Image 1: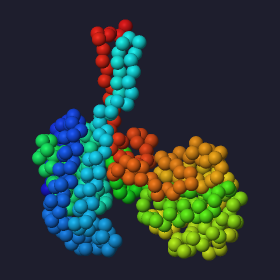
Image 2: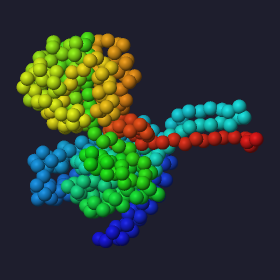
Image 3: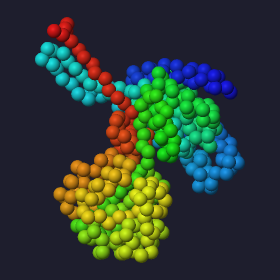
Image 4: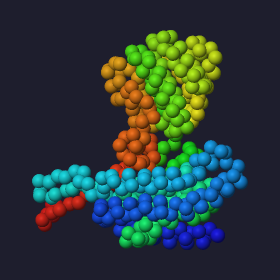
Length: 421
């Protein structure tokens, strides 16, 4: 297909998305809930077709030399298909985020001004991930009253096309114009660049994937981008803390799922507690096969640790590697985090309320913890149900993004003949 033909197809998809978004914006919450439940039922009833499409992706992945771990992430079976459907049902059961009165005031001249939540309109999502993201992302966007245009990874192309087709079919069967859910129907990367220029149609774009993808989308998109580049998460061990509790928190934050964006990447230790704390901490890390990369002070305490480089403190390892630095108190810890961190999730382990308050007030990250693991930065753990991602931006949302974060607002002003003098 030529670029001209691709552009014509994308323009037509955009028009369909706009039409569907207008219908979704005013959809009764009960009808929307029924529509999402229809989506879930259709995914389950058509599981054989979904699994058949997925088998073609698995063959494609093997030909491309995907690792066993990547193939497992790609693979769908009856259990995983049901889990996707149940995820949609969870979203359907949530409170509707559209039409909430956020603020209301009456001016001295009698004007009544009401601020209400409304959908964005059309949301574009570009992602490199498992096929379940197609379903999760669509369900969250639709719950918030948005139409969605999806562009998934090439390795999951057939699975994504099948799932998106089922979701749009559920929309049509529920009386919503076709176009509520659409997937860009090519593996060609040129389609991504074209999608990023569709600012007259797409109101917001969300990239989900590696740092390279996020930076490319951010630099080329003409519409607003909601993103996070990476998760360089920190914990600071204060001079006064429960050492056993601190080690447990660190082990969980680093080792439970080291490949996630909310996993611990750098540990900061107050110099006053280092000699007492480090042997217990290092033993736990050895037991969990964690490679430690430390500064000079840490390496003097643990001679078999690797000497850390400057780049290590900026790194999102996403594996069992941990950077460590000894610091002089909470103020130096805060300076380190604000310099090297990614504004994702950072925490302090301390029994001193004054130090906790200083940390909370001065670290510039989306989510801050006192005496808890950074692994809790997650929509499900925050009671949001499914999430669209974790934002390290300051506009329009920060931290885990659920259905509420996929709405904006408008002002409704009622008068009785007022004119401005």
